[in-house]
Image 1 (spheres, rainbow, N blue to C red):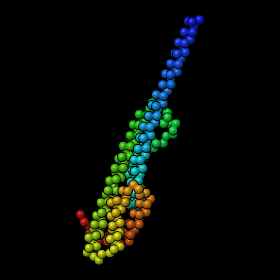
Image 2 (tube, rainbow, N blue to C red; image 1 turned 90 degrees about the horizontal axis):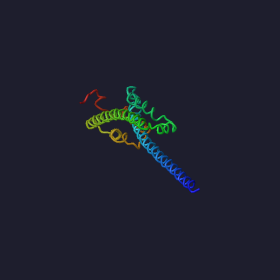
Image 3 (spheres, rainbow, N blue to C red; image 1 turned 60 degrees about the vertical axis):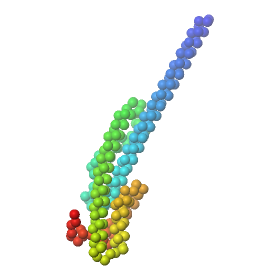
Image 4 (tube, rainbow, N blue to C red; image 1 turned 120 degrees about the vertical axis):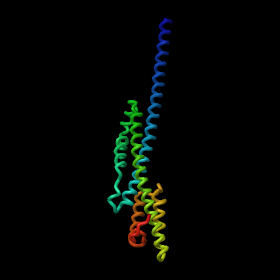
Length: 209
């Protein structure tokens, strides 16, 4: 009957419309998931990069400059940054998809930013400590050069002074230099310094301002 044919046509069109809407909603939801995942990935990558920088500074401070001094300890700010970072980094792929599926990506993003802020504090403190080391050794090099002018100058001494100066001003700040190579280089320089190659005011018992 014509009426039945028309009803069937309408029903078929409605079904196709529902299928289309379902497909559109799926694509929209999939794109939303992808956007959330991409945003989290970018934030997590930035967090890892910052943490690696802080860890690098800490290795130089504690294991290069502090290799023979127990007072050069890892600052508590870095320990706290590590704890906060582990809370957001130690998750499985399923954990992240669950966060996205439950629409809690923003909540996790806030935790990432909190951890990032903690890392920045640790990084700033360690950079300040390394700046102090740089200034200390620049002063010692300058003092040693003054003594060199008063005493017989030595090529070996001047070479060592230049190497120390280059290390604290440039080499240790170079991201292309691995922490292990920096440890090895500084320990060798420090060993030469303490072996008597260099004499500075502090070793003569003279304090300079």
